[in-house]
Image (cartoon, rainbow, N blue to C red; front, side, top):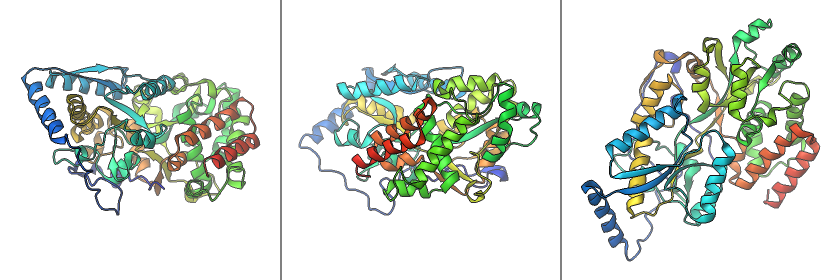
Length: 465
């Protein structure tokens, strides 16, 4: 089972200064295990090493190496995307002998997924690309589709993510095949001004409070709690957070070791609670029609009072005209289960992977871009641009410089008692991740909790769970 994610930039945030250092020389592999020895080299390894060395020399001498690059950074008007577009252009200027074809895709999750799957099917994945545990990463490793990056991450000059916890989602057989490009937390963005207009002066922290305010907001045409249910990832994050507030991390652990079934008490109660929120109008019954950016737009238009989404979207909220009225809090808890209220969903399971073969000029170029884009300096620059946040590396950051929305998040996040990735991340089964999210999506279109849980129990059973 995956271990709980260790979150960087967490403790002592309220003290005003976060201290640390970007580590170099990663630990690699899984905690408690010895470093895996380098695999036996092929007979022609010396020749390949020579070619790699030559390619570096030739590149420095003016020969161009061309690589493809697939990220989610497309819209320069968004802080995060704009920053990483700038960094890509900076790398191009500093490395004129590396030609980068940017084939990035932004908000359309399905188009991005289709692009990756097409590359897998054709054997032509981008040289450097973003992926996550919603894909069958273990199969990619087994089939040799992605490169072993262990020695890259363990190199003395590496300053990017290096801890076992941060690299765990991309570690297979003690070897590292990807590096997280973010620490993605789930938080609720609350329009306190809109709530005050409707007589709600305190930020709702429990589902009981949200259910109580829902009728008045619905009457005014306002969605109490927004979730972009067209996005399977958003649904997965929501139900994982809901399970934590209902059961702590016990549901995650029991589902992972197959000691509970979906058609049992816990799974059925989770599905029924989700359906209750839809039926009560706490969630928008039409939410399954909206992608993340659609729901954020509704929030900006003051048609959604609270919204649960990923940290990737901080910039959108900070740029809103009423950003001073926006605060971040954790996912709502239940009044009779206060012990779970400070459990946070956080994930380091999205990151960059390389498909080009070690020993080739393309591999060397992709590694150079990887090291640049995921360096401690790059993350620190984004933190300064964004006004704070949580990141997969450690560095100094002056909390007094945090912007309003991110600052409220950092204060709340520092109070957490536990953190966990989505419960599906611990299944190590991309098919079950997709099936679970899809089944919960179907609650918006008329499927019953009983039907959903029966289907999930059957599908999990087929996968040996």
